[in-house]
Each structure stands twice: as C-alpha cells, then as structure tokens.
Image 1 (cartoon, rainbow, N blue to C red):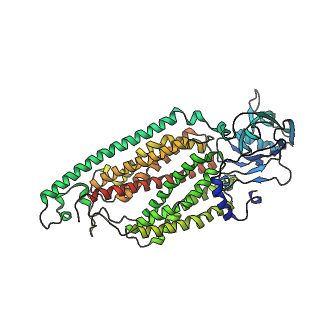
Image 2 (image 1 turned 90 degrees about the horizontal axis):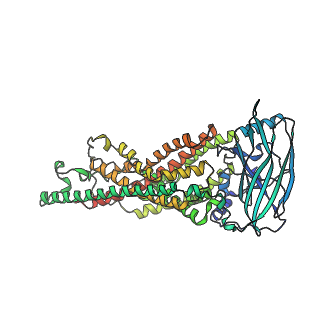
Image 3 (image 1 turned 60 degrees about the vertical axis):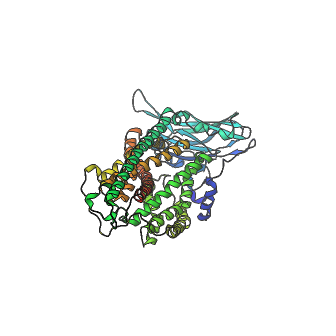
Length: 591
C-alpha cells in the first residue's frame, strides 16, 4: 500500500530526510469545523511489540475507495508504521454524540479472526494530529458454565482537549462490548467530545512521558552506580600510575648502575631486565590482521561520534516526539560520520606500514553496515513470511543503500585518503627487533583470553541499569526521553572502558606478552558480551514475549545492538591503550 505514496526519486527523498530529522515541532492550527484525519496504523499482540500487522488485517470497517496513506519518512517506514485514513468524520471543535462507522455481519472466518486476536491480547494504534492513541480489540469474559465468551468493543469514544486552535491531547475509551457470534450484526460506532484546556502546545507530549518510572530513585541510583564504577576505575588507574613511577625509578637506577661507555641499553642481557620493559623490541610489532583491526577501530570511532551526536540532537530537538525521527537521525548521522571511520582506519593502517589501503577502506566502509544488513535480512525474511508491518519495504532498502553508496562510502574514501596522507611515517619510541621474542608461560589469569573477558565487567557494571531502561523503552511501551542521563552514562562508559583497558594492557605487558593490540580491543569489546547475556535474562524474566517471530526479532536486533556496542567500546579501549603504551615506552631509554 505504501507504493501509492512513495516518491519516485528516493535519492531526493533521502536528502529531504535530513531536514526532517532536525525540524522543530509542527505547529498544527485549525479553524472550527476543519476536517481532522484519524489515521489507523497497526495492530498486534500486546506482549510482542514488534509483531505488528496492518490494522485492516482484521475484519474491521474498511474505508471506501482508495484511502489515503501517510508516509512520514524513512525512519517511520523502518519502524513498521503504515498510516491509513480511517475516513471517520471528525471536525475541529464539533462534537459527535454517536455516529455509525459501519455494520459488520459476522461470518465464521471473521468471528474466528477476532477471537484469535482477543485471545492474544491484540492492541491497535491510531494517530490524530500526530498524537498516538491506543486500545485493545476486545476482552474475554468468563462464563459460569461453558466456554469463555469473547467480546468485541464496538464503540470508540474519543475525547479531544484543545487550546484555542491547537489540539493538545487525544484519548480513546472503548465501550459497548458485544459477543462474537456467527451471523450477528455488529454496529460499529464512535463519538467525539471536545474539552478546552490551558496546557500549551509545547507540552502536549508530557502526558506520554512516565516521569515516575524514568526519574525514579532507581534511575538516579544508576547514575550513582556508574559514578562508583568510574571512581573504582580511577582508583585502579592511580595505583597503576604509582606502580609505573616505581618502575621508572627502578629502570633508571638499573641504567645508572649498568651503563658503560658505548653500551647499547636495549640490547643488554635479558636476566638484567624484567617486566614490561623487557618486550620493548616487540611491543610495536605490526598486529596480525592489521586491515581488520584498523577497520574495527575506525568503525568504532565513528560509532562513538554517532552515539554522541544522536544523544545531543535528541536532547536539543526532542526527537522522541516524532515518529521515526530517532531512526532517521541515526541513519543520516551514520552516513555523514563515515569520514571519521575512514580517517582513523586509514591513518592507523598507514602508520603500521600497510600497503593494501583500498581493501582496508572498503572493509571499513562496509563492515558494520553489511553486518547489520545480514541480521536485518534474516529478520526481514521472517517478517515477510508472517506478513508483518515490521518487514522493510524494498524501496526503503533501496533508499538506505543509496545513502550508503552516495554519501557514506565516498566520505569513508575521502577520510581514508586524508588519514593516509596526514598520518606520516611510523614513529615508534623503540626499534622493533627482527626476530620476535618468545612469550613465556604465565598464570592462567594473565592469559589474553582471561584479560579480555575480565575487561568488560566494570564497563558493563557502569551501564547495566541504564541498559534496563533502554530495553524497557524499545521492547515495551515506554517512551524514552531522559537523554541527559544517557549522555552522562555514555561518557562514564568511555572513561571506565579506557581505564580498565589500560590496566589490562599493563598486566599483559608486565607478563612479557606483547600482543596487546587485539587484547586491548577485545577486553573493551567484551562489554557487549555481558550486555547480550543480560538480554537473555531480560527476555526470560522481564518480558512475556513468545513465538518465533518475536524471538527472532528480539535476539536479532539485540545482536545488532551488541555488535555496535562491542566495536565502539573496543575502539575506545584500543585507542586509550595505544596512547598509554606509546607514553610509557617514550619515557625509557632504548634504541
């Protein structure tokens, strides 16, 4: 149905999305008796938020002729919205006592459809003047004898509050339930009541915000918890800095005692050195799979900037009040921050002497988008099989691909070229030896795999309560609006991640293991592993989701989120460890 309203030139539409993402609230004004459109959107089981279908997939009163469709943008389509004009006659400030929408003469198939929907607690969503309205299809009334009776709500009582010439609030009450019996004729009716109010237009979305839930003591406790984790990470970092000062004093004393004219301080006998200084000749060795690591670090840097920009735009522009605005902003910001991924990846690859920069650039530009595409393709196939609105239309896919091909990819190429040119020649504090030094066996807790898995515990501890609020908003029916909390938690996450990764890198180098690059990345990225494990607990304990459709969507999109979080944290951890390693080896004497 959306094909009737999609513009023919999707690249032009993609450009228009940019302005739509940052537009202010629409100031809708009406005169008395101006017609209003009640848009019907979707219907689906209450416990499965993503399992939604066209409202008219149930045998409700269909509008006559070719009803108008409303398409609000790319984000709205990707969010599974499909607004259709209900053709219910509503005029501004004109009350309706009771009017008939249509009459439904129930046949066996229609009665069965409604009964199945009521058994699964189907809810529906309407919109009037961009304000959402929700309601249930019907209810089940137990009988003293015999089977339970399924009741369908046949009357929609709409109450509209207005301030002068603007609509402030719309409420829906469902009344007059009738039993579903084959051959029975149901009179579907509606009424409209208008109530003046002094609430300003700018505050009309306040009624949808759950202040008690999001600004509760638990949410403030999450901030305190995150600050505590940051304090612990800072305390460990201070201890590490004191240990480093002792190491410097020790190495300086050894240099003074053992230095003789013409001697090479970095080629002394191994028995005279210990700890992290012993691997100075290998610590700057080119890591394995340099192209992949460069692409991951570049992509993670881009995602960090993307998250920061989206949070700031959400704070300034209150994007939560517009359907699909957050999704549109994410797509647009991701396209325009691709320069950062190319710049960081190209510079890192060039500094390590990489030669296949074109392959690295392509990997950087396509790694995360194609991972998301793969997960989305599987989820989309499931949605198409179920006939759900969650299925992404083909033209929306083409639009996203055009944005990637004509904006994201060229910017990644430009960033890679500039990053290669400005990176300069590799300048390592210590010369890399020709023959790699063997890595001695250490205790189990100093192995890279253990260091990597332990590195994500503190960062996860700093965000897991905020993750709960995010999950509640996305997988349930809460409207997330506390982006100030999210900004603070995100900054704390970055600080804790850097501190913990640096400590892990120090322990690894002190164990004479110089493979710190991938270990530092994986140590920070393991935060996403704990988030995914938490998502399994959340699904099992905190939700009532069921069925293959909702389960595949939940774990598929949660996997997509965790992959992005892992790459983001991994890049931040690697960059912090890289600065740390270069700083400590710059302050020792070596050739």
